[in-house]
Length: 187
Image (cartoon, rainbow, N blue to C red):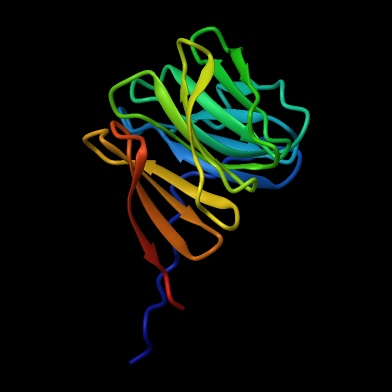
């Protein structure tokens, strides 16, 4: 009896960048929007079910290497290869902040689950926590020996976790402003 081969199901395909797509983020509130960043120096916002980007956000002068929605899906942060970070207001469709502080490519960003803060990780080996309202970096965590490739806040917002290209994962206490623990990733 011949076996039936299953064709993969493609839910939706988007095409909207003129170069490589470097990053993607899905909105956590509705789970119906996603953002992409690319070599064309743009961040695009997509709605599931729509064939074209609903927003194309510009302003970066180098490729966009990370994007992340805030909890309400009203703001998008985008980090670039230059180290520059931009915040875009999605209702207005324009950049509302440009933040400088990383000396090289911003690889990852994550919004705090409750407050107006976000974290960013960079090839410069630093993890930074930013206050959106004050438009400034409020804490820099040092300790990675190579770039910080991923950052995430804990669901309760008390910690931020960083993963580095040095094979180390670090858990930082936001209230105390210090390292709680680090884990060596073997392999």
